[in-house]
Length: 148
View 1: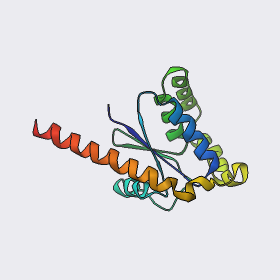
View 2: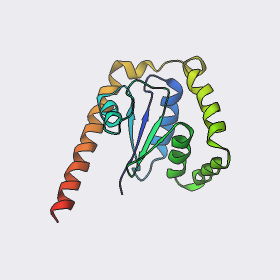
View 3: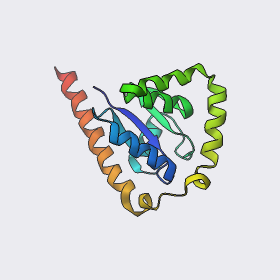
């Protein structure tokens, strides 16, 4: 199974808590979680032609399709499976309305929860190495599959 890549603001405490929650429930390894400030996060954003300077926007890349803001959140929660599949019902709310509220939270995220000091002390590089390892594994798998 191909992993979905979730890119988030690693300096945001709220974002870190949400990503930690996702990571703790990702029993099947469906996600590759990358802070947007890490080299791996910036590389993936660049590869998909996305801005590397907008940590307000969460990005989910699933099967080479790119989703941002509320759509990324809804898809990520649905990928967790179980009861979280029902989070996708949020799509009944028009994207403009969902993204309006997403924007309010994104603009005020540091006020609401503060900055994550842990990420500034080296967690980015640890996740960067893990992200690089996963990307290298994916490339090796692609080479093996193409040579079969």
